[in-house]
Image 1 (cartoon, one colour):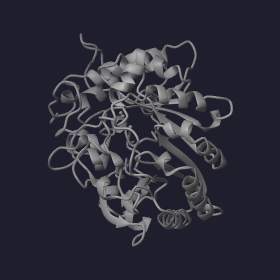
Image 2 (cartoon, rainbow, N blue to C red):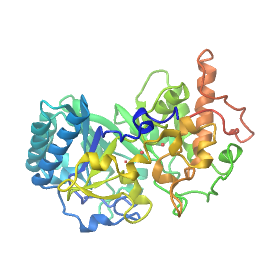
Image 3 (cartoon, rainbow, N blue to C red):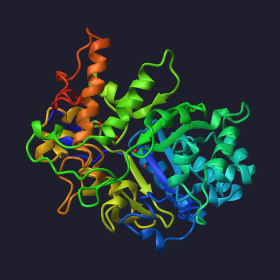
Length: 425
């Protein structure tokens, strides 16, 4: 099938190019929407607090071997948690040193980190380590002080906005700006979308990642109840679209700005897909998954977002001490997300939005019995696609958009027919 990657068509597993390492499995915040601690999978409870150097060393050796076997010119290593900065400056320096030494001369490596950032102000030596290894840092911030503190609190109930803003002032300074990759924000229907976007802009982020809250057909996200569509294409545009309404307001504010204020990954990837390109994110499009997770104890897992579906969902039965990444790449869980259009369920595969939407984030498709379903955000994605496609068609009349953009209904939605799709997660 033309939409399947060449390796998948030939029956070969695709290599991993991104490695997410859970270097600390605990956190100094107690966010109420956290998929790691508040969702179905509770495997963190039995894992060590941090990834020890023996585990790092073995993981680094396997990454180097995998990169060499597949002649990969570059790999990405994402430091994650829990809260990765809880490992402290000395351990962070040691583990980055192990990774750098193992990969030197084998492949280029890009280091990044997703963090709440709070330890940077308390332990400035962490910044020295991040500079030494050129680690790009993404920070979680949910908009205004009130909106952020509604969900992102310390275990004692105090809000974390003030402390996070202090860290962002630090990262935004000339001395540390090169580390600052951007902000991650979870969409909250209780917040005003434009006010949220402008609150994020106050911190001058190079890029913003807007994430839909994790939800499934079994545990639906906040907002009106949804009914799973069973017949495309008309069914995908039916139902409430509160998240599309929220995101459309942000898109128009961002798109209509007199100058470029920042990048917003979701919108940029949708535009690329609508114009016939490929997206780099698992949340949108049909690009094959090339990310693997290594937990603090060396367990090899699939995407973290699967923790929101059911206990044990990300598991593979593999670990870095007894297996390698070739074995992981051959695991059916990874293969299922590398098949392009052929990997979608029947409703999505027959939908005109499929090549752009890609079925939405894999975890968001879950219902009892499996993942061969449309996203729980199906109607939202269809409405957002139609809106962005319409704006592009008006502004770029000579550039073909993937599919015809429908005339909007009285509610401003229209039927499914434009072409494109959501954040870890």
